[in-house]
Structures are given as structure tokens and as C-alpha cells.
Amino acid sequence: MVKHYIYNVDKETVLEKISHLQPLNYNAFRWWRRFDTKNKPLHKYSDLLDKIQNGDYEFSHYYWQAKYAELEIDELYNKCYPDYTLFNEKNAMGGARRKRLWDDFEKDEKERLKSIERDFPLTFKISRSQVREEIDKFGGTLEDFYHYCNKQFETRQKRLETRGRPRKNL
Image 1 (spheres, rainbow, N blue to C red):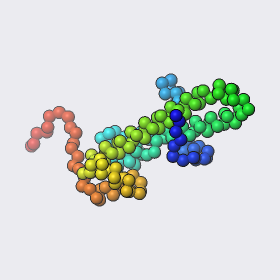
Image 2: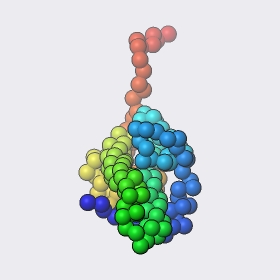
Image 3: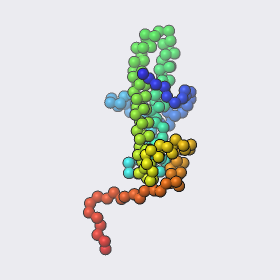
């Protein structure tokens, strides 16, 4: 069953959001994906604020790709209007693309929320359940939430991840 998410978005908004994404070359293993974000996610050991500013926790771009696929399906339907069998023949690939993009969107959003719940307790002395409660009460952006947590909660000291033998004291 295909779910419709968030908002009923107009064509101009979808095209504007898609224009901010980078086109991908064809990949036989992920043929349904046409675009990707321009900023690559930072390493897992990067600072939380840097990840937020890089856009690692932003709304998933698969939503806009799925909406773009729906626009293509609508255009095809308008071209083939009286002939439904012709539309069904031509739309087999578009329907599969849309379904896979919605699945990617669900998976990506779930993973982003999990990473927010995991990364905030690593930076601040706050539990995962407190993160969920505070986010529900808070009404600003994620960067504003970071600054709010910085004022409200203590920060954890970061351990330096070093390899090998410890340095000799001179």
C-alpha cells in the first residue's frame, strides 16, 4: 500500500527542490535513484554541530525524488488519457520507481531520527528519552536545538581516539 506523505506539494516546489540535488549517473543496482545531495555526510566522529550545519540530519531528499516521479506519472497519464492500457504499459517502470523511492524515504528518515537520538546523548549529558521529549517540546531548527542543549545540559568530554602506544612524558 502506497502512503502519501507530508504535504500535497505543487510542481514548482518539487522542481525547485530537485534543482538543488546533484544528478547521478545510471547505476544498475539502484536504477530508481536519479539524484543525490551535493554535500556528502561527514564522518561519524565529526562534531555534532558540524554535522548539523553540513545537513546530515536534514529532511530526506528521497521525498522530493518520489514527488518528482509522481509528477512524471501524472504527465504520462495526461498524455495517454483515454487509453488506460497504454498508460499501464508505459507506467510500469514509473510505478516501481515511485514505490522504491518511498521505501528509501521511510528508511532514510528513520535512520536520520535514530542518529539524532544517538548523537545528542554522545555530545550532551542527556538520555535518549530526554532527547525525544525535548525535541517534541522545542519549536526551532535543529541547530537552535543544539544551542539550547548546549545551554541546558553539560557537555561530555570527548575522548581522543588514538591508536598505538601512549606517548612518553618528557
